Every structure is written in C-alpha cells, then in structure tokens.
Length: 240
Image 1 (cartoon, rainbow, N blue to C red):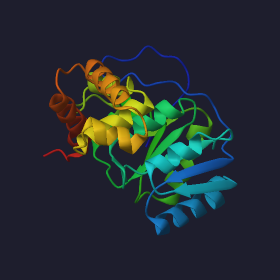
Image 2: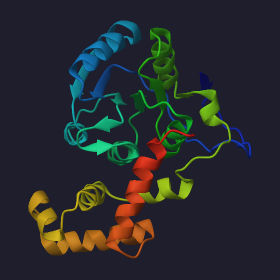
Image 3: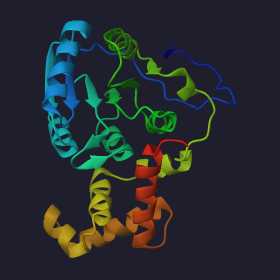
C-alpha cells in the first residue's frame, strides 16, 4: 500500500491528479453495507483497532444520504460498492456530492485496478479490500486521519481505465436529485412514474432530465442511460 502525504507537489505526467484532503479526528463512522455480519465485523475492527467510538450502519445508499442530511454527521463514511439501490461508482459520486468534506473509504471485494482508479478520480479518500489484514485497516484509517490518501501503489500509477476523467467529471456535475432521477430513468421509469416516485411535478422531472442530458453531453434519454451504464458497469469489469 502507498500513503500520499498531504503536501503540494507538481503532479507527474504519468500519475493521476488526486485531491488534497484535510486531517480529521475519527471519532464516529457510518458503514454503508447490506451484509449485517460484515457490518458487525467491520464495526468491531473500527472500534477496537482504529479507536472509532460511535459507529452506525445502514444497508442502502438512500438510507445513508438520509442519515447524512442530519445536523450531526459522522467523521468518516465506509462504503461498499454493491448495494441494493446502487452499484459501483454511482454511490461514490452521490455521497461525495452530499458530503464533500467527509472522508469516504471504500471497502470492497472489487479490487481491480481500474475500479480503484475510477474511485480515486471520483474523490474517495481510501480503498481497502474486504479481504485485507487488520493491520491494513489500521494503516488506512490512520492515513485518512492525517489527511492522506490510502490506496494500492499500482492504482496511482499510469494505466488504462475504462472510465475516463471526463465521464467522472460529468457524473459529478449532477445534483443529488438529478442522480436519483437518472437512476430511475435507467430502471426504465417514465417521467410520470418518476414524478410519482419522488413526489414532484412531471414538469420538474422533464426539466431535470433535460439538465441531466446537457451535463452528460448527450442528446437523447437512451444515450443518457447508456452513458450511466458505461460509467457504472465498465469500471467494474475485470481486465482481461
């Protein structure tokens, strides 16, 4: 594993430009994972090994976003990539929009380099494989507390990624409501159904869909769906 110090350096041409984070005292955490046994084990690790005192867990992204809307937010969010209501990069993008200043650590069994590179571009603070040893969890959260990035060295080196910087940037332009609407569009819902689902006017949905297509740089609803699917699934496809 490699730890990136929180000091300014001119980026090397072969290395991705990563954000700089601030040091933070890790006293509370929100685990976003739909596997109760893993949540319990991870909570014990964060409490006993990392020293995080207050730990909550939720099983869906929407539950996490609702929790993060409260006045008191956790010091760190620990996210799985595969959730019942979202897959892959979508969850990271929406969480980063909701809490731009809260560290996000992805703990996932999907440890392909292209996955980690895409996640780093989307703004995560750290990546730890689910099968990692306890010492790696300790090192990862210690680095994040210092305002550093924790990720495999190879993920920080140059290499091809199916998800381009432009795609990540475009997804990051969507508001939380627009991201939710895009998810429902991808699920095959029409504007009237989306309006009912979100309790908003159909004209509001139409306006959001138009804004989504503009931000993604596409001309049709189907192109928006294909763009979202490319961003979500190609990044999670293992390299040959």
